[in-house]
Image (tube, rainbow, N blue to C red; front, side, top):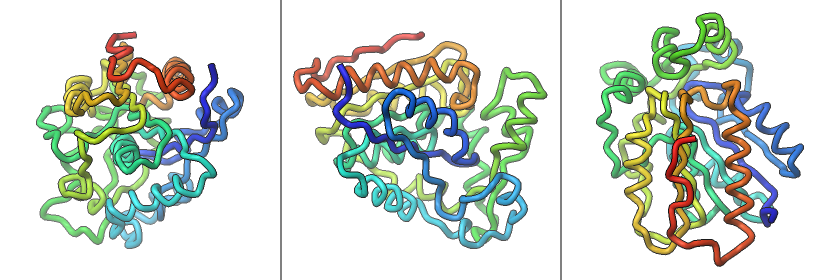
Length: 277
C-alpha cells in the first residue's frame, strides 16, 4: 500500500541547521515523496554565516516559540493536502502541536522535546539543554552550544573527528526566547483530543532526549481511538538525522506511513511497534 499524502514537511530542532535533512529530502524524493525542510526564520544561511552573527542576531534572538509554530503552521496549510509532518527534537514537539491542530495527515516525532504537561526531569536532558534557557542573561543575545556540550547532547559515542566535523558543519546559534517558550502554554497540546496517526521515534543512546522521556511523552496521550505508536532504535544518539544508520530510521518511518495512511480501518489505538530495533 502507498500513502495517500505525498507531501512531507520536515521540521528542524534547535541548535542545528536545517541542512541536517538534506539526505532525507533526496531519499524521500527517490521514494516518490515531495519533501522539504524550510529553515527557521532568521536561520537561512550556512552554519558559518549564522555563527558569524553570534551573539548579536537580534532577529533570531527575539523569535518566539509561538511565532515559530505559526510559521510552520502556515507552511503546512500551504500544501494542497495535509502533509506528513516529521520533526526532530524541538521540531518533534512542533510536529505534535501541528498534529493536535489537525494540520497533518500523519505526524512523526523523532527524538522529540515533550510538550507542556510532560516535565523533563531527566538529568541528561537538564544537563544538555538547560543553558539555552539563558536565565540571568540577556534574551537579546543568541546562545551557541559549546563543542563539549554538543559532544554530550548530540554526538556521544562517535569518533572525535566525526564530532568535530558535525559541529563545524551544522551547529548554529539559538534563540533563548524560543527555548523559554517550551515552558509556557505555547507548547501545550490536548492529550485527550482525537488526532491523526502519530509515531514517536527514540534512540537508546540519546543523552539529550532519552527513551525514558520519549516514552513518558508517548504515554501521556489518551488511548481514545487515535493511532499512536512508539519505536526505539538501538544504539542511536540524538544526531540521528546524520548517523550512518539514518536510512533505517527513514525506511521505518516510510513503512509506517504506508501502513497507517491508506486504510481507515488500521488497528485503532493499537501500539504497533513498541520494540527495540
